[in-house]
Amino acid sequence: MDINASLLGQAITFAVLVWFTMKFVWPPLTTMLDERAKRIADGLAAADRGKQDLQNAEKLAADKVREAKKQASEIIAQAEKRAAQIVEESKDTARVEGARIVAGAKAEIDQEVHRAKEALRAQVAGLAVAGAEKILRKEIDAAKHADLLTSIQAEL
Image (cartoon, rainbow, N blue to C red):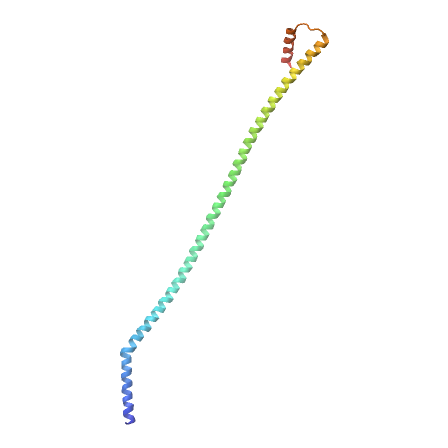
């Protein structure tokens, strides 16, 4: 075999191999590479969308936390206001109750003073009778004495 014929056979075989590769092997390979590149691009786009969604979710969560804190502070303010109202109502109730107790005590004191005055009138009348008996040393008339004591008692 001649080197030229061998070289020509190898060139033809190489050309057939190149043609076969270009016709049947290369298109599916490029299709697979294109599909893989598309999947990678889609994955990167999805990752970017995921990052954007995460940022939006974080913003939404921060807004909701802010709103919840605002509502909590409003609720606390309302509770403090209600507590102050309850304290004021209790103070007013205590004042009314205290005034009622003071009025009752004053009425009781007035009754005790009246009883004491009556007791003193009776004692003074008894002392007056005893004094009159000692002075006169004799009894004149019991009915007249009783009328006299009643009039003296009324004057006291």
